[in-house]
Length: 109
Image (cartoon, rainbow, N blue to C red; front, side, top):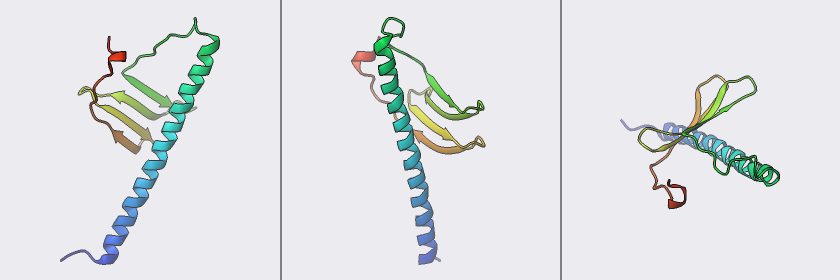
């Protein structure tokens, strides 16, 4: 027996709310990363000799003031990117698995 129209509407509403929450989290992360880039650039202007030209890592972890992991941006073993945001209880708030992408020639060794 097919689901009732009300059940379908409730499910769609829940899915839309979940997508809206993930969208807000993603835009917040984009804003934070943007501020980090701008801040690093501004900082580097005055300390060009003291700041490395390139920072490299396979994994970045974002921790709150209490040391709890709140986010992670990493390259998985298969070469795909993964961005995860955690709630304060350690559960996944939002996860944005990426795709493998070609590395630009400007960053290849």
